Amino acid sequence: MLSKPLPAYASGTSERPLLGQTLGANLERTVARFGDREALVDVATNRRWTYNELDVEIDEAALGLLELGIGQGDRVGIWALNCAEWVIIQYATAKIGAILVNVNPAYRAHELRYVIEQSGMRLLVSATSHRTSDYRSMVEQVRGDCPRLGEVIYIGDASWHELLARGSRADHQRLEAQAATLSFDDAINIQYTSGTTGFPKGATLSHHNILNNGYFVTERIGFTEKDRLAIPVPMYHCFGMVMGVIGSFSHGAAVIFPSPSFDPEATLRAVQTERATALYGVPTMFIAELGHPDFASFDLTSLRTGIMAGSPCPVEVMKRVVADLHMEQVAIAYGMTETSPVSTMTRIDDDLDRRTSTVGTVMPHVEVKIIDPVTGRELPRGEHGELCTRGYSIMLGYWDEPERTAEAIDAAGWMHTGDLAVMDDQGYVNISGRIKDMVIRGGENIYPREIEEFLYTHPDVADVQVIGVPDERYGEELMAWVVMKPDREPLTAEAIRQFCHGQLAHFKIPRYVHLVEGFPMTISGKVRKVEMREAAVGLLGLDDVARIRHA
Ligand code: AMP
Image 1 (cartoon, rainbow, N blue to C red):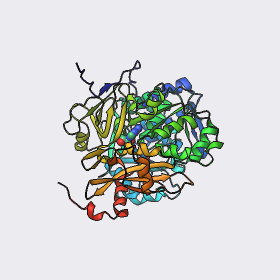
Image 2: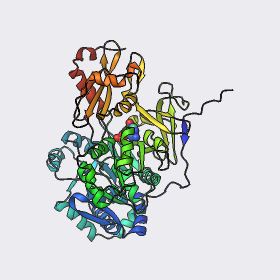
Image 3: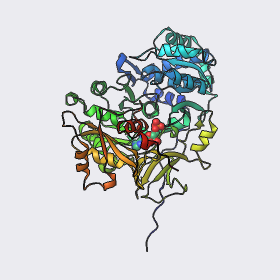
Image 4: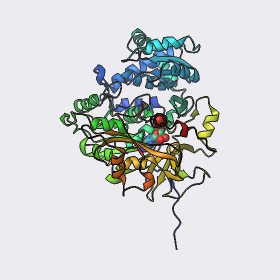
């Protein structure tokens, strides 16, 4: 008799209960346990803090904000690349229950104005400038259009020092009184996430959401107070501020910022000089580090673990991270801003194959299921469908957008991720792509991810992305954008097809190949496939085909 296949559903258990604390209370616990240990190193400005020292500055900033009339539920923006002040404001706002609004440092005036207004921001902490970004002049440009925005504090200038000085003169008991009014289910953070269309949506997260996610993520890679984590990923994104900073601080580990924005050499150097035990990154960051011309000259033997996440993680790159970066216990995490972010993750004791080729199993206290995107019904294990997740990690909602919230979170509390995934018999999950990225060629569903993985095994290919482009005959055809390894003969479309021949089904073999230096990317490391598709239409002269309408 055939046994019925298991449903693609998993619920994460743990001996450790969820933490029922505010973020501020959690930090105080760490300070009490590990006050003299190093908490934060800002390499670019050569500054470092122990937990005791950092706690003093966080309290000064928190009291300074209270003195300026900021209170529970008020929105406070932060617009800066990675720096110590980002962390100070992150915890200062949490301690008084203000809602931190992360503003993407790549934004320009128009987008800045949108998030200030959409969130109803009262106070903004901003960088002054960095390279070609003149943050101060953009702030001044939009300020007049934002009547609710009162104070702007610029990091490093007199207004910043005044904030701390004001706080240092204030009565510390105000902070304790304020803490007593907070609840761990309060909103404390808005993270704007942009879909491929429309204005960004403000995922609104509570203490409970992000404290627990940060804690359980680093728990899974065995963090203790002895760990030292290098964070080259941006703080405005959950990977930096939740998995990175909250993940470290909840265990008493140290955070190291190698540079304000990602720089492969600065990252390798910071790992070496700061003896980092852990390193985070999106796949393209690890690719850039491994490909650095002086890679072999760095001593990276202090590394033990780390996380690759944020977009599909190529198996070959993961293997090099284990072998060449010494990250024997590296993990892959899968998640999204709206879910705090992590829903599944590999374990350090999973076998190498699972650790490099899956996004692991469900996180503690979280549920995942895979459904048929059309009928909404649960699928059996082994079938591709939409991944949904539920639990403590689901955001409170999109800020001030109940309709968009209701489109994402169903009546039973499941967040519909828009990601295609498959779960195996042991509960390991694979991400097969975005529902929107799936290519349908002549009626065959193709997951670009599968072809990308195959092309990564080509000895001359450093990085690759596969997209669907319009085609009169098949509806869509495949196109591969390839970044070559240095000093190789340029690959032709014919050579790539030869490589695939006999290895991939004919309909999965890319028709077009385009050699590039890099891909259009968001600064959180996501490849902009929509933009690639638009460019490809122009490159291939497919405007007429692209205009063909479909029912
Ligand atoms: P964000 O909200 O910016 O963190 O983006 C979340 C999206 O990133 C998810 O919905 C996935 O499409 C993608 N993503 C994150 N982690 C992974 C991963 N490990 N593998 C594949 N895709 C991922």
